Image (cartoon, rainbow, N blue to C red; front, side):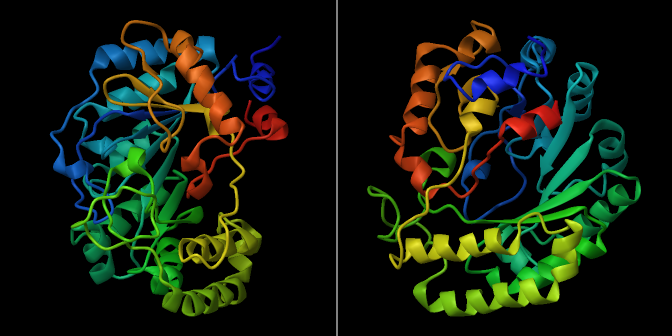
Length: 350
């Protein structure tokens, strides 16, 4: 069977025959100070180049088509451009996922080293961006994006919608358009998952056992929902051309799922099960080689003493894929970032 067809077998079994996408945390250091994440408080570790070499060598055998460099802040790894080039030389497309703080200074390295860029953009004004991300840096981030966009690198912005920024969604779209981005995307803030960010909030509507004395939840409240609905109506009306052109990554209907998510957090509706097969088409590789089926599920092994291909089909990994597929993982109920690829998409990407 050709490599192009091998990923299709992933869709009919919990055993992976190919791996279209990997997300690689090349560092767990971060230069943002986000209110919804504690990773920046931890000591910084960088992925060593021996592990990078091992992963690059497995790109061809596993049919890895896309590599997302992430972290922490990926651009804090001192050798990140070299890492990107190693994966490109192995035949993969490389996407850099970044907070954008270093884009302006390292614009040429980005242009020379990656195929696509995704930038976290959590405010439409400097004040809101500073309040959420903990650094006063919105103008230079937008300047860096504009330089890179003019060089032809496709840029997607990703905004985590929360109480402090939901009123600025139109301003965020306008700022992204002015910087020349190709896609604008939104997802809801996670307030439930222990695996992805650790205990952070103290509201009773999150999953049980979150400790007290944490920052208040950034989720929209019941009082916020009518205003949020009106903003979504405005976006659908005023940005119709951007939906039609594909600039808006989500359709109006998908954006309204954000409203449904926050309504469910406020116990006004049940959570809608997300459509997702991420553990069957991708994996997350942490800085020390630890594997996760996706960002939000527990670890299932490590590749230090074995190949990535072997670790993907170890008993713990197989069992985790069975659990999420059969609806046994509570984390999946409130997932804010599902990833789904059907047969047609896998063939097209191949």
